[in-house]
Image 1 (cartoon, rainbow, N blue to C red):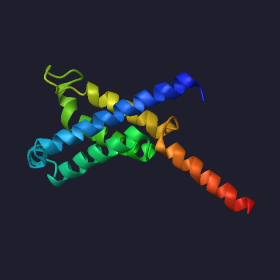
Image 2 (cartoon, rainbow, N blue to C red; image 1 turned 90 degrees about the vertical axis):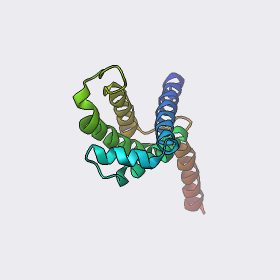
Image 3 (cartoon, rainbow, N blue to C red; image 1 turned 120 degrees about the vertical axis):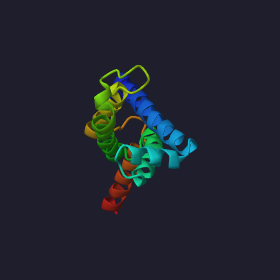
Image 4 (cartoon, helix red, strand yellow; image 1 turned 135 degrees about the vertical axis):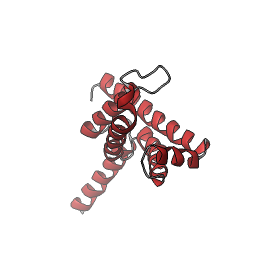
Length: 143
């Protein structure tokens, strides 16, 4: 694999994972009940806040380390599309200057879509597990 490609993929994956992890962590630190209340106020079931925060927190860590990257990224695509359509679209691309725009959500959606399509083989736990399974299968076949 091209070394520049491999490292650029790692950088993208780490930034994506870290960003989602921190967003999930903040939801819990600020009081997940507050987030659930906000979800209720915009017409979404409050319990959905727990699922979103957990996906961001655990999924962010998984993507950071390259574990289940395609599956988690697919969930992130759905999450970001929902956030843009339900919450951010009305505020415009840049919003009102106080973070209400959808530009960051769109970037996270695009990054997630990249990993949904391509996966992540560069310095990823998925690759380590895949290589280990291949070696196990070769050992089984040769026995």
